[in-house]
Image 1 (cartoon, rainbow, N blue to C red):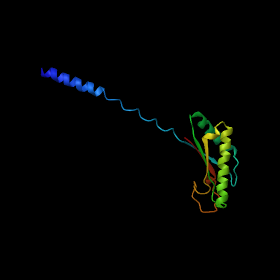
Image 2: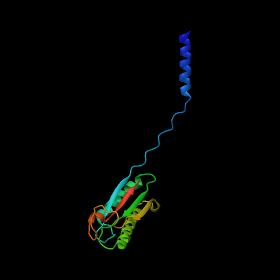
Image 3: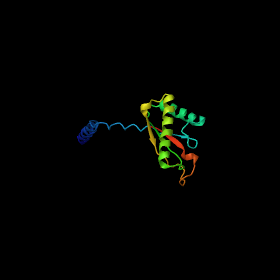
Image 4: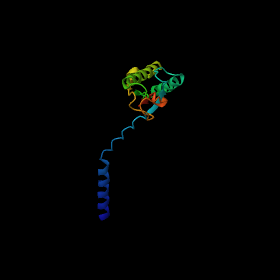
Length: 141
């Protein structure tokens, strides 16, 4: 009798546990972030052949993902006035955006930002020509 009662209680307990809803599925992980660096000659906003190769590579990655969002952030070194460098950084970022669009990346998926000489890759004093600081960073999310 006690065995039968325990079996009924155990069955009721197990059946009661089955009524609980399953936990919601885990959220999908965010898409991986891809970064590309496009470097520029001193005081220039035109793409070198090597820079164009990098833009083409970034465009291929952007087009392979669904709903990719891109940010092109332009930078300069510290030679020249800060206001000139801000404008130059924007020209560089817009040059990269235009090249990405020519490669088939939708323009409305690309945001352009200029940082001028405020976010140096290589820390330098004012007035220093540092090639690593003359760049556009392409971030694909």
